Structure formats: C-alpha cells, structure tokens
Image 1 (cartoon, helix red, strand yellow):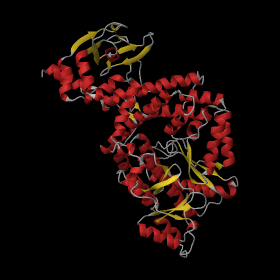
Image 2 (cartoon, rainbow, N blue to C red):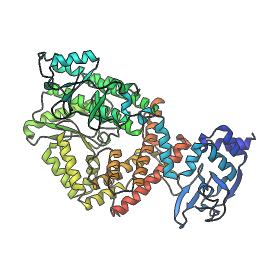
Image 3 (spheres, one colour):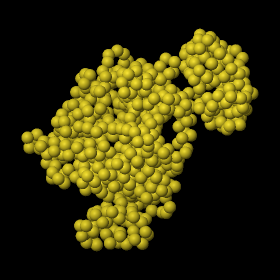
Image 4 (cartoon, rainbow, N blue to C red):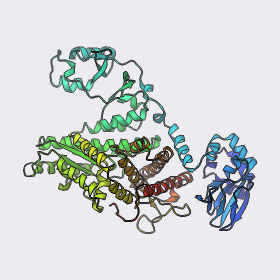
Length: 626
C-alpha cells in the first residue's frame, strides 16, 4: 500500500465506525477514497440534492442542518455525515456547510453499501443518531460483562432449605448440617401458604447462640433475622452485588411472585465477581483497631482497578466504592463507641454527597453529619458526640478519605444537631433559598443514614420530597444554580480546556461532566417528589412521571454512564501507572472513541441544561457551588 494510503488508513482506524472494521474491509475503503477540500463557508451538501458519497472529516469542522434550516450538529475530525441520504433514496436529508477550511475523504456509495451489508457494527453505527450511538456503545460494553447480563437465578443450584419458625435451635442446626447449607429460611406456616418470615445463618448460630450459650430448645424465632432484604428472580447478578454491598449482608433470598425461589450467598457472587469488593467489606468489619483499618485501606485502589478491568459499569463501581466507604465509617463508629461507651442519646450518622448517592470513586473527601435525638442537651451530651465525630473523621483520614475543605463534617457543631434543628435547616433552605441555602441544598439533599437511628435520615428525606416539589421558587433558583457548571464543549464541538494553572490544557470530568448532570437530575427528582438518592435511581423515578420524555431520560442515563466510565478509567490508568488519580483529562490522552462519544455525551448535557432553564424559568442570577 502506498505511504499516503497508509496514512489515511491509520487515521481512519482511530475513529468509529472504522475502528472496528476488519483490515480487509478498511483497505477496501481506503483504496476507493476521493479527497476534496472545502473552504470555510462553502456548502458541501444542499437539501434534496443527489448524494452518492459518505463524507469523513480528516480536518476542519462542518455544520449539519435540519430540513427547517435549524442547526442539527457541529462535527469535526474523525466524524462522518451524509449517511442518512445514502440510506434514504440517495437524497440529501441534512444539508452541510464547512465552517472551517475542511479536508474531506469521500467514500463512494458502492463501498458504503458493502460495509453496511457485511459489518453489523458499521450498520448499527450509521443507522442511528448521535445519542443513540452513545447507547449502542454502552450496550456493546455491557454485553461483555457477565454480571450485567445474567439473572440471579443462574446462581441458584438447589431448592431452598426451609423450616417453620417454631423449630428449636438444635433442630435448625441439624437441618442445616443435613442439607449442607449455610443459611436456613424460616417460614410462617399459618394461613393458606407458607410465608417467608426470617433467616438464620452459620454466623448467627455462632454469634447469637453459641457465644451466648443459649439452650438447645431455644425457639429459632428468638435469634433469627427478620425484616429480610430480598431480591427478585428477574434481577441481574450485578443488582444482587449492589444489594449485598449496600446492606452488608452475605445471603439474599430470591423471590419469584411472592414465593421463595432460592438463596444466593456471597460465595456464589464471588464466582462471578472477581474484584473482591465484597470480601473487602467483610474484612473491614473484622478489624478491631484503626491501624487495622488503615492497613487494609490500601486494598481499596486495587479493588477499584480490578473492577474497571473487569468492565463493571459506573453504577456498580460507584456503589462498590460507596459501600466500602460506608463500611469504614460504620466500623469506626463501632470502635468509637467501644472506646467512649454507649451514646447518651440515640443518633444517626449521615453520609452526604457521592457516598450517599452511591457514586463514590477513589478521589474523594469526607462529607458527613450527625442527627441527634431531640432529647440531646448540649451541656451534657455534646462532648461525647464531638469526641466520636473526631474519632471517625481522623480514622477516615488515615484510611484515605481526606478531610472536607468546606468543613462539611460531623466535627463541625453546625452539622451535629438534634432532628428538630435539622428540620428547621431544611425548611429554611427550601423556603428562603439564599445563595448559601442553595449551596447547602446541593450538598445535604444527597443524604443517607448509614449508622444508628437511620429513620432520622428517612424523616429528612420525606421532608425534602414533600416540600421541594411544592415550591416553584426554590426549584427555579436551584435550577439556576445547576446551570453554572457547563460541559466543556465549544462552538465547533471542540473541547474547552483550562487555560492556565497546573491543569492547563485539560478539562475536569467531575466539575464539567458528572457534577452538572447530577445537579440537573437532582432538580428534576425533587420536582417529582422522589426520595431516591442515586442519580440512576432518580432518573428511573423521573421516567415514571411526565416530566421528561422517555428518550430524554435515556439520553441522560447514557451520558452519565459514559462520562462516568471515562472518568473512572482515567483514574484507574493513573493508579496503574503509579500516579495520583484525579479528574482532569487531556484530550490527547483519550482514545478517538472516547473523544467522539464524550462530545455526544456533553451535547446531551448541554441540551438538558437548556431544557432545565426553560422548564423552571431559570433565567439570570448566579450562585456558584463551592
């Protein structure tokens, strides 16, 4: 092949849909290419004219328009246009004009049809539009991960072993030994059909029966776990993984239309989940000192990298990292209570921000608070809770969770208050939405009770859900605040980069990507009265209303997933290279595939922000989140 053709092939091989073509097909393309140059302002395709070419941009930029004359897209190096005309009677459906001096490779229709008929990925790519391509790219990735495509029933190898709740301790142990199981499901056999009432595990027998020297005739109901966490037979293995991580349980009954189908155990999940995040969580809860927690915290980054290399999606990784962070916090609270004694009044320890949303990664700091019982008397009780908060915060810092620079931590007395005070805080933020109130809303409206009297946190969630949806002024100002961080996409679909400082020539994937998305999703979720915290769960709640079209919800979900996974991969690569991970990415460090689809994802964010401004009349004003 001639050197100039080799150069063309190497360039095209970097960009979809040509990056997945077999070598023989790509060479057919290159050998039949015609090269054409267009000066800025020159029409390339005009509406309705005959078209026999697929256009590939080697350099420059092109604007594509709808039939109405409305701008449809701006595209640049490595992107294609003209495909819709080739698929529809060879007539131009989307006119195009060069907006910079542009070098084009023209691929004849005969070669286009050959590729379309012989390569499924090529056909998928040219048949669907930008945002659908983003969905297609994610779908291909998900299919490579068995956790994403396999139902939990795949892990069930036997019928469930059950016993009535009236059985005695010794008999329960005998049944478990006879059947060789580590968990026994306990059924209420009164009524027309048995109903799942509780579960007993090997660990329960050790810690609740043997350690307490209970008599063999003790009713099993006295030590069983009730209020069970279960999973549906139609759920996927990755959902079982997230449920186990979030709740720190090792056994999940699988339910099918109200009946028990079986039980899956941690060991079953581990067969599919090689990242060992479940084992790490279990190991955290077995540590008896802060030093021990600090020692195993070194495994967090290894776990993160393994999950990335196993093609886990961002929801799985974010939930796993949040589950690990929760476990460190919970164990520190237990150790703190052992050292300081029992709390003088009930309390709830709250996680805030990314941990509460199950969207935590390895570059993170502490965001937490305490809700105290209304019986709290500062003079009598606060010394205890300050000491406990400091113990936890210092311990988290030793385990790699940096102190919050904005002092959003339970060590700050402002964020260590009785439930009644918290209710006043939240009401004031929604009823008198000043700049500071809006900043606090963005932080504290992502909350999760992770230890102690967690129903205190549920009370605040209910207050927010009931009040925010009824306050149009609050939603308008919150939406306005959500518009302050825009995606790093310029007029010509080029990336907007930092111009100075240590992160010069890069853009921040959190501040300019995932954060604007989570901000606008939060506004919509509050508007529809959802109590969900995770951004994907919030999108699911939004989809059940008429607030957004299904396609718009799908686009937001895909954009969030793709931006998140690029950010996650960037951090994993830094860890593997021995560098400190961060959120700042340089375009040249991204693959052409990532650059192309990031532009699609950022365009989704930009369009969603335009709708947010329209939907909530969020014009003017400026509050900037810290």
